Image (cartoon, rainbow, N blue to C red; front, side, top):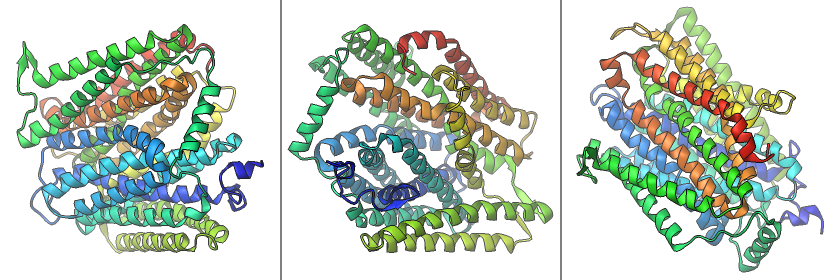
Length: 588
């Protein structure tokens, strides 16, 4: 049997684009449009909720605290539902159907948010959470299945795929933000939904390129996969079946965690407290989340004790990394909450004369150059696939004509002004831009003799990100109400946040897959995403306190919190490097 047939499609590797099968670039564009819609909506939500209820572009007039409570629960759930979406796809509907179902649900979510009502806002966010649960884990599952017989090509494939993620985030935040600021919030939300729908259609119409990859798993296929997993187990990977107590604890802690997540916005926005009681001096919500934490720790420890020493040590290392992940995302995700409020209220964004001309030139290059590159990839894809997937190519062409049209309209509109103000959502694109600019350089460092241990990468990621908040604390030191800081401080902050992300983010999931036995992999991946979910929730809750902390202390004090905490965490994890090396038992 040749390799191509094993991949599931006799012609799979015959249609190549940049040395990879054309199907990879279908996934690239599907993920790009999904990230376009996700980040386009994400960058608008806090701004919309906290915008004044009067004026030319009215919002809901919420406090930063209430907006942070809602966004935090939304962000937290985005990392929990994929656990269930992956299980459903694996066992019942297959990866392709999961992606399509998720995309349709998310499109409906964006459509709901286009409507001007509070109920439709909540409905839209709920649909986006459910849709992401189906979509997020299964795109990478399709990619993994495509390359399972070609492991040497997988790193390059993931690099290309990651570029699609960042390209979508870049243009989503730029264009949805611009439409929201110039035409109205709901036009920004609506644009996100349109491209989500078009991305879904082009993915479905490209089905001939994938053969049976990602299809509904049949009994025979499941049996083969089970036999493969069983054959790959070594003596250390002894079965550790879930007991009735394990399952009960998983269900109980999940329910308490979800109730806690929902209770935050319900109590602050709707005045409905699900935990309206006290235990001693402890508030009911604090008591319940501490109870859930104790039960979860008991579950984890009891399962760890059933493994052999080496496996147990390696999983303890994963748990330590997951713990420090919380501190990273708690700070990094200020980009979705406090930093957009800071950009709107406290950054001097006004431009005129030479500064306006320079910005317009830079913004034009930032817009046109990536669009030209991605359009070139689109043309290469069309040349290889127009006979097999003509409909998919037509839909992709329509999406790019739309993007080009909106981009050119935006640029012409800005060049026609004698004075302008940078939209606060614009600064959010810097993260994606810096990732695209520096990812290959950081990757080369990891491939060189200077490649540090995992704990050092982790610590440096936390510390480098903290430097960005330190610069914001310095730049905003001593400013009073009504005084604004230079935008250079925010640009530098995003630069250091991105460098920190590149040091830390790719490391985590890689080590989960290396350190955890097959039997425990789903549980530990779930635990990893739980850590990220907690980090996102904390980020939004703390970010929502920006106004309260600024009034009580200062804006500089607020940013200093996110400079000090990650720095301490980073130094601590670096200090733990000798311990972690022993726990990992030779895994690098």
